[in-house]
Image (cartoon, rainbow, N blue to C red; front, side):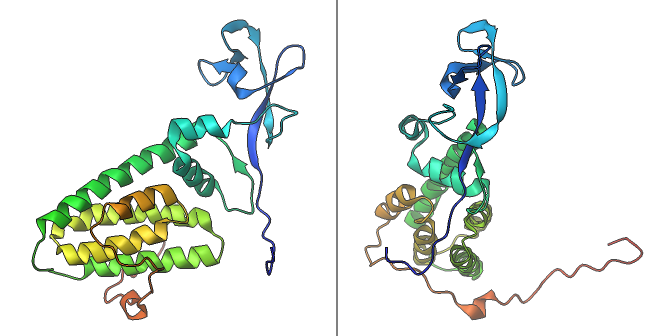
Length: 236
């Protein structure tokens, strides 16, 4: 406070569990072998009733210990998963598979960071195209728009697209200046989503200039060639 307007976010939800005596159980007290039959941990004979996903609350014991999750996967993985699951105005359905997937994607981004640092060290003298600049400009434009519109889940989709595109275009052997300039812009745009990861990557760059949100070059958003789909009699 003070703020101009209030944006109310959705709640984080999780399945609820009860034992045969109708007592609430926490997720840590429940176990399953096949994802269908649930029982009390280390007591296969005691069945567990699985209830609907509800907002996390201490009374229903359907909470997740954030310290344990952060210890196992890191804070950025948690942020990445919560933002990717659904738009912020809707409820988030917590799942172990989701947090694991986010953790694995961060490892992919870290591997890409190592690849980019290697390319910077090679210091190719000349760029053969401006594809890297265009890709970065489009990425900055999409992230900026999605931040403004509160569509944070779309930013995660932008990150996945960026990872795939950079992995491909790095084969074009860009100069260290081009790579450094573009990659720094990308990392700055990642700070709202994965601040620890982005700042760690920035610290490994040799560039010490002041950080600022990158500007979008509108002229670079224009595509010279586009795919235009025509459908005739139901066939493309």
